Length: 179
Image (cartoon, rainbow, N blue to C red; front, side, top):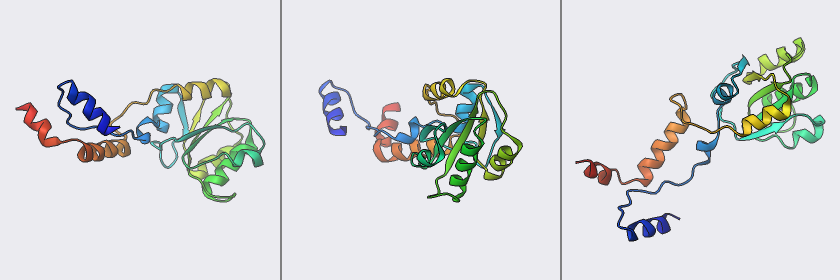
């Protein structure tokens, strides 16, 4: 693609200073960004409120079949009255069920608070937890529709951008063009 972009732009008389490759991480929201977009609040900030979300899952099916869908950096949207699913997700995060996967966050839907037992397990897990007043489907739809924006606290994304610019942009040509 880089070669074709360069050829096409150069045929039009435009100088090509670099072609940046697609980086999936730049399309992924963080838990803090999801919190802001949903106008929600953290029930627990957890260990990493700036965790990147790679996969969005709804935890509404039975535990055993649901576990096969959980991957690294998953966001779980769970009805707040599903103590069984909340416990299972925390166990996966802590490596107590099947293969351990880092859970980026949990959104409890339905405008309910978790039971005391589920709340204790969530807090102990270190997973960031948001509360949503909306039903599960509406919450998932809103999360899916988020337009990801770069924020100053997005250290991993900023580092990625710096690295790809250093690797794929001719900085000397850019600076020469400014003179």
